[in-house]
Length: 159
Image (cartoon, rainbow, N blue to C red; front, side, top):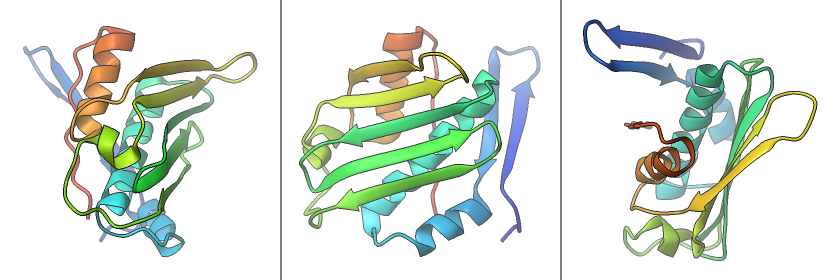
């Protein structure tokens, strides 16, 4: 295990493809140590932390990006925030075990995903889009399609 968090950019020359690789080793271990989440709830938290880290780094803002899903399902709260000062924090609240893998709408019993971009002084920008798909990567891809009109794909691996 590495002793620090990392964000690395990469580019496929002569192709319209660029990306970033995020590794949240130290931050992830600290967050897991203070969380009582298990299983898929913990996986969703790791994915959300990775997503906001990517977003705050890509946007190059002096502020923060927050992802939030709140509902009344088996997992009723997921919040992840990353700042331009290279800090991340997040939490997930689970009221009961998940019987099987369902859509995110079923897991959270809500139909909204909220992303807030706080770029210093002034009003933050908040994007509220339908929570769609069976994975957080699918929901974020939908967010970018609807809010940003920017073809974007996410692949997450959380251990």
